[in-house]
Length: 189
Image (cartoon, rainbow, N blue to C red; front, side, top):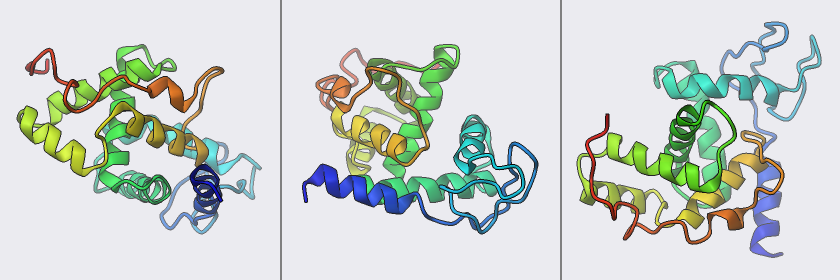
């Protein structure tokens, strides 16, 4: 089996994990605890992934110790296992996606815009370029291609959506850790 086919099979398995915290259905408020993320709400029939997507905006602003933070970490752990990076790498890309979407009026963002959001998030999160490079490398985020693999892992798991024309190759050659901060370290606003 090819690496892509193996990853695809693993993503399908990742979609079947159970929710082990109290999450209310976005359609009817039914408690989704114990159901799998690839199923539907037994009360109203809404796909559980739609509820999870509706919570995605809250992930960026929620207390990370709360229920949404726990769910966010669970989902990131599943995607990380499929993509082959540490969970922190997936979480950082999820945060960068939030930064990029806010900067672009919550619309779908391009690969370049997401990578710009990753740079912006890194400059706000880390103390200096050396710390950013060290931890991003440790988290499996050495190149823009790594970001693309994570994004398409999120898409395969049903946690993000691709627009027409989106592909992993859109992330090819956009940055490496050697040039991500080429214009210097700016104080985030």
